[in-house]
Image 1 (spheres, helix red, strand yellow):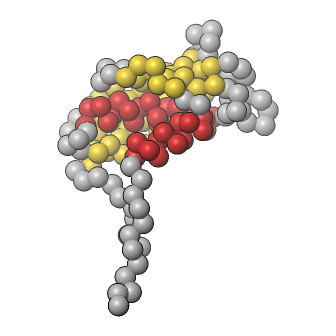
Image 2 (cartoon, one colour; image 1 turned 180 degrees about the vertical axis):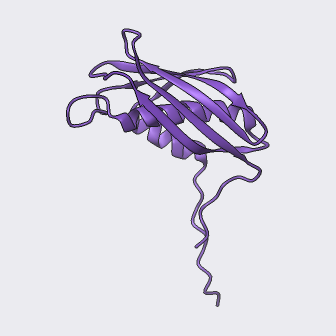
Length: 144
C-alpha cells in the first residue's frame, strides 16, 4: 500500500485567469501581439471611499499585459509575472475603465508591457507596467 499523497489537480493558467477576470468584470475587446484592449467596470471594484480600488487597476494591468506576453511566448515559453508597478493619476468613480496594453520590450527571457488605463472621458487614471520572465517549462504547484 502506497502512502504517497496524490498530486492535486492542476488548473490551467487560462482557467484561473478567466475566474478572476469574471469576478472583476474584465472584458477583452482586442487581442493581438501588438496590443490588447480590455475594459473593467468601476462598480463592484471600488475601495471604501467609492473610488476604483488601486488593486483592481493592478489586476487589469496584469491581465492585459500577461495576455500580450503570452501571445509572444506560448507555446515555447511560459510568461510569469516578475514585477508589477502601477502609478495612479486620478480616480475613477463610475462607468468603465479601459486598458490598452502594448509591449515595450519582448526578448527571449523577459518582456515588459505598458498598460494605460483611461476613464470613459479618455482621462488617464493609471499607468502600469508588468515585466514577465519567460520560463522554459510550464509552471506548476510548489513542491510539498
